[in-house]
Length: 142
Ligand SMILES: [Zn+2]
Ligand SMILES: [Zn+2]
Image 1 (cartoon, rainbow, N blue to C red):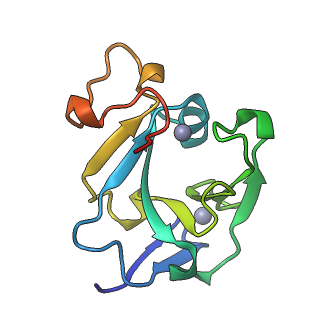
Image 2: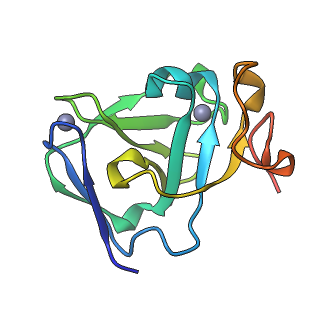
């Protein structure tokens, strides 16, 4: 697959995902309270990429280490964003040391969601985007 590139809203940060997301790539949607606040919205909508495939072409993302008590996994998570315009970029969770969960708006928001997690925190008037078997009240576990 071809590389994909994206940037934050102000253009200070430019990022390349080597090899793109893959043809069958799907997104994850997280409704947890942390994601709501950090996305400034109802949920976060994320792709999953190998850390080694993410290249920062320009700028220096800022990292916010969220308090341990706020992590659903109980392990540290650092959330990266543009220090100039505040666009959220990706999260690095110690529970998934090889992967970034990366915000998809930078790349066109074009991956269909495969699952939604922490659905219990969604508003009663929200409608799921996935079939009920892909809707989880907690972290997705196989
Ligand atoms: Zn920016
Ligand atoms: Zn979340």
